[in-house]
Image (cartoon, rainbow over all chains, first blue to last red; front, side, top):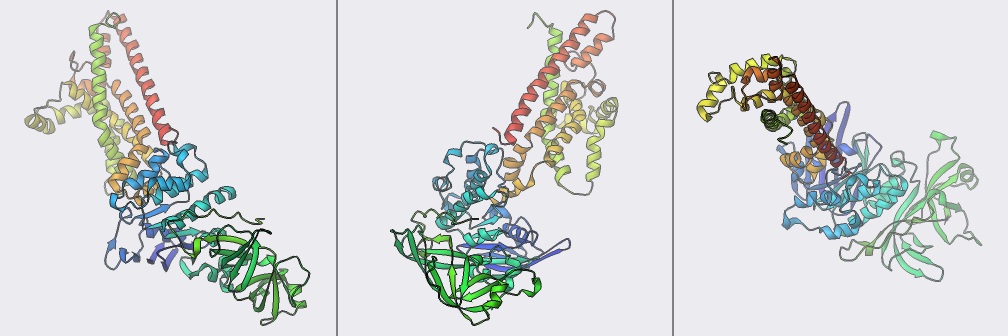
Length: 383
Length: 233
């Protein structure tokens, strides 16, 4: 458990933030550029000093203004992955990877060099200088350097932001591997919701220097009041499901979740594995009776729970509706449909889902350090 | 080699190189310290330190030589102590010539190192801190290697300045054959008497060759260091 309560005034900007991050899994700090996310994570690392506050990890105090405690960064043992890799140019890749490892007492070296080199696929780069590496390779080496310092937690400050989309999807699986394999808690700063949905368990929304909301990713992203902060990108729902069967004849997988069952294109994994699903609001349509003779497989029955506000922008053709199908499911319909179907809170509807994407897979519902992690299924329909 | 150069010429070359190398060798650690203080620290008296370091750049070298003579002569306040405690005599010895060269070259060395210190990406040092490296460790494993091109550049400048040093040297340690008669002083000596024009010309050529060789060697070193810092080799 990482506990953070910090206050700091920077020129005209004020940070006053308090949250807790779990001892395993990924806690994401999400917010706009300039919301104060990086300042908060720098205070965690000891690279910036709060005016006032308290920082603890697993009961050990790293900073306490009341008691005058301020553990210097090199003794906090947080592995920090920066946006621009910050590899040391005068060392080889190997020299970079081993920099923190050599400074870890032998008794505390739980993470092995060979294992990390293997997981990150950097064996062929070891003797290279850092100058010739691609952006994706640099970030992989930076990840390896941080985890090899055997940290109590990994801090990542927009580690994918400097990469183009293709490189991003090259590096993302490696972060997932670190998360699942080494069991080190990760505090992940980002303003990209797609990364967070895929990686994080807990979401901390940072707005204008303070914490607007904290909670499980599924809950926070489905809250309408936070929509101005979480952004339109998501305009969709995320929820957990479990693999119940594979249908090899049709290459389909059946998933069970709180709202029933879904059949989706074949997902890698064994029966019982937990996956995180995302359904975009515009990939769902509504009808008042159960549709017949339709090509879509997944039709869920539910009730309209909430209708998004349209008054603020009455020029918009669309409106988002939250339908309760056992879990909150966001649906985007036209305002014309809203009126013509007379949709109102409580209306019984059938939601037809055109496609789903699997955002994340967790082995057997929990991290298992002994088994190798499955490769991630390819992104489905990524426009 | 003895067919090309006279013993007197060899003596002057060896002495010049010895004096310059010693001057640079002993200047570098304090120059790095001064550059670090000026580039990274804010403290009262910082401007004064900056001015004092730069003073030899603007003072007439003869004034510096005279100042050294007063200060470091055997009866001087510092020179006396050095002699009584360590038996060290600077005035009228080659060691004194090295001191004179060092003082004159010092501001050039500090400037070069300070420039490269200011261009070091301090975020790399912060990264090293998070990887378990304390302040001294960061300095020796990150900062120092990254400013190596600046240190080399400073050493080259200082070395070049030392090779040509004349005014402060002749004032402080005079013109003693085999002890303080460096290349420029030997050349000056030859121009003061009528006759040996060709001998003087030979010394000019030797000075040019020594300077070119030194510059070529330093360019080679600087290139290697730069490539290393930029992550190319």
